[in-house]
Image (cartoon, rainbow, N blue to C red; front, side, top):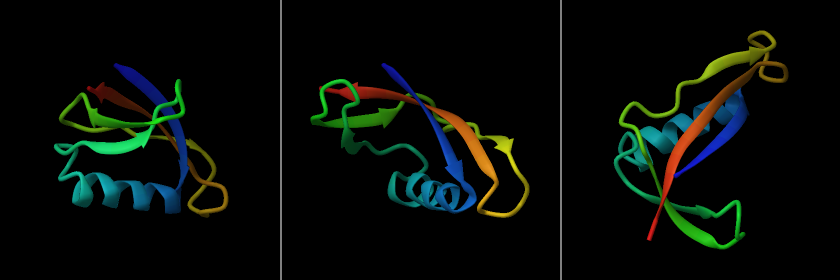
Length: 78
């Protein structure tokens, strides 16, 4: 298991949400990403059914300022 903290802008959050909802079918599918320890490609999936919970971090509604924090609760598949 691995927990990845992330901070996203409004635009990045929209892109992430589309990836999570549409491409991963609300987190039910696995995906290939870079293993943060080895740097190699690895297959991951979300550990929880409810996905990452975003919290407003800083800023206002301006995309250049607004930030969202979350932690991706992932597992690396064999």
